Length: 424
Image (cartoon, rainbow, N blue to C red):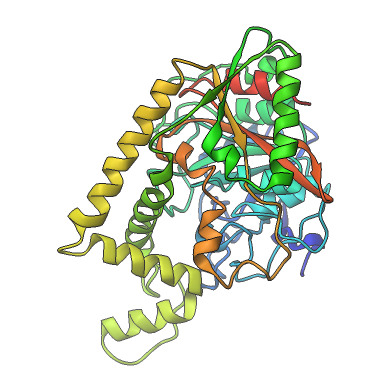
């Protein structure tokens, strides 16, 4: 590992451009977020030497707020993985559970915060990629509502699902970082006016008296018993502080994982088409026609998981199968959204274990891709519905951190931050 925990692909110093609320604070930035004159690899050999000419909007906002960026954090290749083991630069180790994975795909960002290598971090969340490593590393990670934070400068994997979000040691610091990066951006037409000047940090007051917490029973029941015990203790703590706890069932939840992977892989097959050794990516001066040269570049530059997802996504979009797979996945996505809307008529926030398992040992999770996809079961429904969700530490089990996930209505991050802060 090139850095402690292999948390960084590139260590660097990007100085602040002015004073602000993050003055004196250091931030790790996931390596799929563009930084001018600093290489941005997406954890892939395909972009090993790629150096952007511009900063992502979130990077501009960090340095304008006084932050010092200390490195580009390790990640699963193009965000495809749940353990940061598919990185072309090697796996990230979990500082809070030595020998085990840090989670993914923002594993380097979470490890940098958990290991004290950065005060704060930015990750990206396509199907749980902020919440997953936050839970495994015992820190706080927030996936914002789609459109709250600009994605300008983010190298896309599945653009209808992914969001940039904060990772920090505490809920209040997570909210403080969200205050800096949230808000509309003229360079990203998907950003929204909601959330402007919201003062999220002020919501971390720990007051859940009168709040209704809906426990997503099917996600709780599907988790490891050790995880369930820690989760139940956290819910009991919220109840002791004045919250009312109710059970919630989402009929669509069993179909969310399959729908997510069809949509994510389909978007990946399109978004990664430009990495062909001519427009972007490794170019070996190969012989043959264009198709042969492109194929050799992509064979050399992409890892196995990326190739697998591109092939599956291309298949799902191909003539004769679009209606059978992609359209059905979009129908399921609409069903998930409707289910969440109905649930928020019964509860203020929804709760589940963030991850259904404890962090695996490094090297144990890559042999069976389907098993690896299953660990996303509790987090991907949120991305399908474009909702906000936060993972907050809830103790430990067998020496490893456990996280609780709270989900809220769109553009109501205040509610999540308030509930999450009650668990600290």
